Image (cartoon, rainbow, N blue to C red; front, side, top):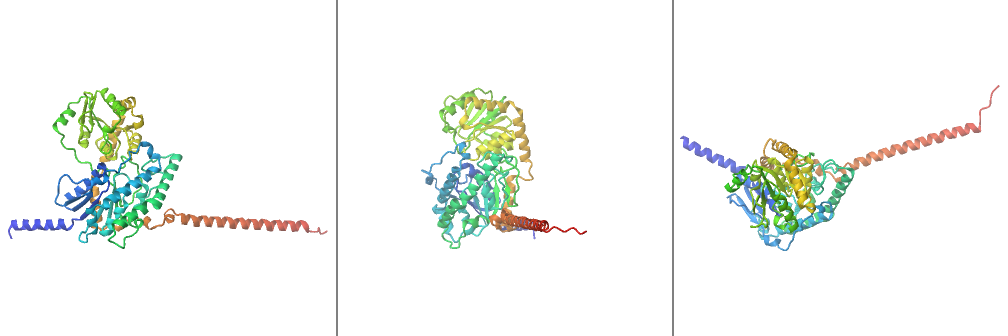
Length: 523
């Protein structure tokens, strides 16, 4: 046998072995939000690069076509007329906000499942998948895909998760030191904050049980109608094999985690790419540094009212630093000479440049993770979602300043910007957290891929499942044990009370008898 023949057979064997371990993976992301898709698509593209067969249902098809990556693109036309209300930062204390998010999730979930291509996939008896990956964001009816295809369910959360998401995998989530996503509290809460956190948490759990889950369950039964044996959604959600959370201790707080709750915060971050030459020159030729300003993908800067835009321009015109502003228009009236605008900037690559001195941001989690990764301090102007909480954490950690949108003036913004630029502690803290974030045994993406493939290799890895999921709520909180202990204590106390009372009565009776019949003195 010649050497060429041996190499050829070895190559065939390697191809066979790699294909035999490749998984058929279905990914479903029903949110038409670019920031949600960035993280999700990063994972799916990497899985495709690892030779897995990937099918993705989303509003955002891949830009670079891959032979083992299939897009099922949802129809954006359905979203017209479905207006999204911009949540103000005051809404973080509103219980009604949860209901609004539930209603939004119910609508987007229905949009996804009624899509003709999606229904064709559901009704097909030829399609088969080894894993189902979906987003954990008010779309539990999509868990029906895992039951239809008899595949382990993996959920990917675009943030650190909520109390009810923790319960899906039996993750401990005490109200005493784990703040709710929508509350701007730290893990050291005052009594009032713990009370608020507990009330909101209980409200969310009861609301899910009485209103939200029944609605999602009805959607699941309506669109996964090919199966008569479809379980209840309460049962199905507890079959989650793996929970991937976009979090890390550098941007959140330490807490206990079960083995199948994995933190992969920042897995969308890649090594910096070379910047376009004009942008590279702009950043290089900045002796006083550059400030980068972007409000993310959900809120466009052109939506700023005139008074806010004027405050921003007035502030930038007073600075000696250059400013890059992601401005979604070709022109910006009264643009100062130190300001450069563009409809799009390669944000992560810009933050990697050594001349970036400050990042003015909306406080979104992806942007927060990127600024931590590159060690850049921030000034945040949160608008909605978890942005306010992220900026409170930035202030607590000492690498940023929060400027409330309602208090966004030339004076407040100029103070915040000059404070961060002049006080070295903000950059020092950002660099300290960057060291903490980077000090990981593997990259977040490698960790995510490992655990996804681990679930595939071990057929759902049921050995990772917490026994907490098999307990009734009163058993989980040991209410039955405490009730028995309380009953025993009360019984002992009552017994002792009756015994003591009986003894006292007997002693009194003896004393009364002695008093009535005193002993006669014997001479």
